[in-house]
Image (cartoon, rainbow, N blue to C red; front, side):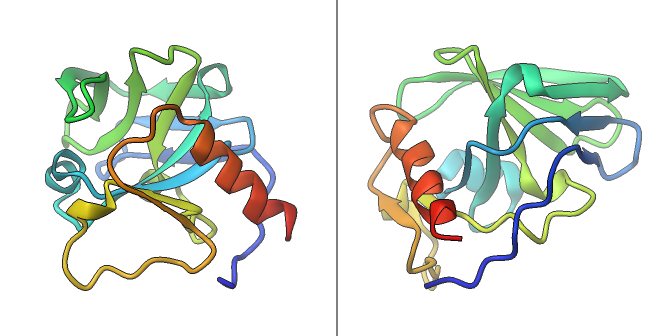
Length: 160
């Protein structure tokens, strides 16, 4: 079992590297997911992208100009990737197939120590030496629906 800190109550505040773009999340997370696909690895320059899923209406872009880039993923789904227009920090993405959802990069939070993945996707593309939390699910490729990510999160945090 992974030792997990409690998830603090919202709001959660975050922003980009230069401080120009700021945002706030007013709802609890629905999932904390690590994506190991090549796109996410390139976007972050890291072994994966750790993202937090929330209802889109619970996320608020407060300030700063942002740029939007549309990308078709290996799954065939399209997402709009939002970055700070000044420093280029990848802030969040909006899946076109799920307009009620938004996924923000956990690393953009002011306080992110609680963001430990409960799911990993595209694990067949994971960097060598990647470790996975024993209580987190591992999914080959992109799941058919995101419900598997939400169910994994609920299962882990129902035990807390």
